[in-house]
Length: 204
Image 1 (tube, rainbow, N blue to C red):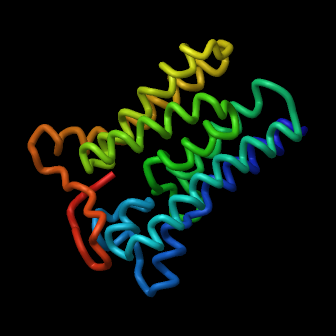
Image 2 (image 1 turned 120 degrees about the vertical axis):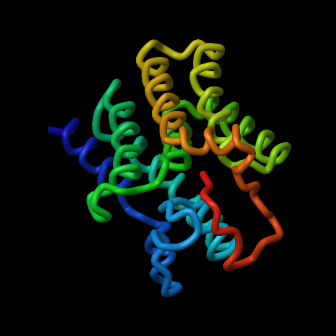
């Protein structure tokens, strides 16, 4: 019973659409502006830096909370399953007809809750790549690749390695449109100085 409760709670936590709620608070349906993606990057670009960062922190928090609750309720490998459920909840939220974001931030939160040392590698990779390229999509893909690599290097057990490969693959698949735009040199860069109402192009 605890296992089922942990997984269901993780999905419901992951499905909380903070980006959508932040838009509603400003009288904007985030699904109709910018890239139309229900994610922190679209909020950052369309509603401003402060709200975008707040949404990113909230999305990361969903993943952390889902895995920590699962750890309190049950044993391995169920916290891993809960981490996956949180990601699925974000990508396929029941409240938005199963059309959500790309799962990067909530996935990062799950990594923090599950394997904190590996999360340092993942977060460090994301920060370095986004600072060097200004492409959120490139940073997200790089961080996804860094997850299984970091887990392997730090000697994590096989269930974590399997989870890392599945989560990494999901993030990369969700960014396939971004990769196409990168090859066409049509992917927009992150403008750190932009306030509100800016870039309306597709993004991560």
